[in-house]
Structure formats: structure tokens, C-alpha cells
Length: 116
Length: 110
Image (cartoon, rainbow over the protein chains, first blue to last red):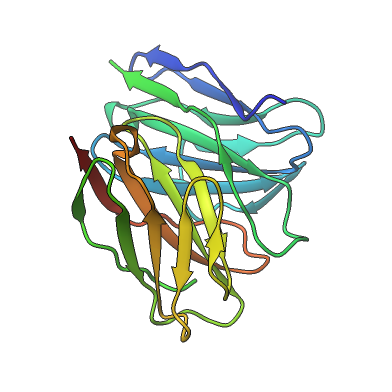
């Protein structure tokens, strides 16, 4: 039973390029969350998605960042026209849903973006 | 979701119990207490959660005070590999996002 799979694990981009980070949730999980961790800082919530729906994007920067979780395939976090300040570790988490009351997140190993 | 307060850092001797406190004085009746940890730069790892009763699993024990305003995570026999940042989170039932604070950096020393 594979866990949350993120790829690429490491990504290097030059300023102005686009970065696409992918996340495949655990089997049976229908909820996906993206978090960002800047160097030497804590985890910051970005966005929460269900299949084909963005539920909460209150942590997403207003520009250049977008996320999707299509009916088929992984969730994608897309960063357009990257800048050096986007260099960070991006973690994806998944959960089975909210019907059981508690909402335990399973995290992936993260994708580390470096912008040159 | 209720705010949590944790000490910035703690030390623990290898083999001894590590007791990590968390204050959540504004917790509501339908909010769970969750603990996660992040070892170095790895992805965060779920440890344990509880609502009212004390909980125990293979990793740790969670002690929640009767008024639910604070809790303690107990690692019964800390090892060097338990050195990590430990996050205490309070979140209501059926909530979506989890908000991580700064956590407690636990250093287990030989």
C-alpha cells in the first residue's frame, strides 16, 4: 500500500520558468492538501482539494500559483514565472475524508524546488 | 480552530520518557487534538490524536486534561531517532486544513 507519492523530489528552475509538482494520494483517499515550508520555517497551509473541487485556497498566493485535483490522475501544484522566493519544500498530504470525524493527514516526502 | 502554545525546545536523555506539553485553552467541544512530528527535512508524520480520553498507540501516549485545555504527548523511551519538531494541532470535526504552528524541537541526547 503505497503512501503519498510526490514527484519530482527535487526540481531546479530558473527565474521566470514554470514549476509543476505532482501528488498522488494514498489509495482510498479523496482529499489532498498542499503545504509549503520555506527554509528554517514552519509548514504553511496553501490549499485543500477534493476531486475536481478546490475546497479552501486561503493559503495560496494571489498570483502565479494554482492547484488542481482532476477526476483522473494526480493533484498538480503549478507555479508560473517562478522567483527565488519560491524556493522551498512543498509537501502534499492526503486524508480519506471527513465522515469519520477525525481528519488524520498522511504526508508525502515533499518536493524541493530551487529557483536559480 | 483553537490556537495552541508549545515550548520552543526541549531536551531529553536517551532511554528516558519525553513529555511534550501543549496548551489549547480555547479548545471547543468538537475539536480534536492531533500530534505530528517532522524529522529533519522529511515529510511530517502523524503520531496520535484524541478528543477527550487518553490515547495510546505503538508510538506514544496522549494525555488530555479533564478540562481539555492542555495535553501532553509522551514518548515512553526516547531514542536518538525521536529527535524532531513536534507539532500539536487542534482542529474541529469535519474541518479541512490543519494549521501547523512552530512546534517543539525535541533533542534526544545520548
